[in-house]
Image (cartoon, rainbow, N blue to C red):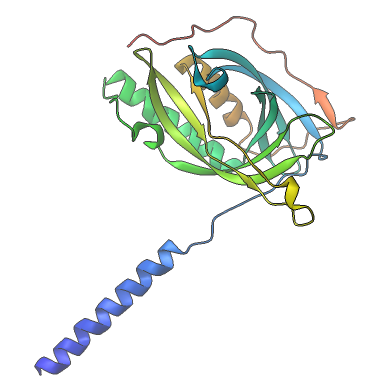
Length: 232
């Protein structure tokens, strides 16, 4: 009887371990974007980036926001250390951003923000797509990457953060074209993050947008500047 019981326990453990391994091996939901797809400018947002080589205070930057109807993705186009970056968010990523900002505002209002290394990904990690290029005649690198959602304290002030992790581009035809993008953190005040969240919310349901050209402006951004820091 004891032998049968031991066999049963071993069988249950084996099934449990197998199930755990199955969960861990779930396929990552990568996606791609065709840069020649129709695209429309839907806004501009302000945010902060590190200065060159991470020296000095954060620097405010205005970022162009594009919508690609065919792929149903939002693109944040910005420049950093001589490169132009196109950071893409699919619907799942946009939803996670909205939820993360809601949780951040709750923690902010409850004064539950803590200064630790885990805060930068406290609200989750989403999968994104990145295209980056030095100048128009150089290789246009592209790859999927992780984006961490959380917050960071800078100069005693908290910022909602979007941490763009490394993306690795492998060129099958020319090894010299291989590229690895740097880790880049975007710092948002609550007002700045709310403006991007509103654009994400407005584009959760795909819509047919008449586009005469591949690139068309359809949004005039607010001219009022947000404060660079949140009081806390």
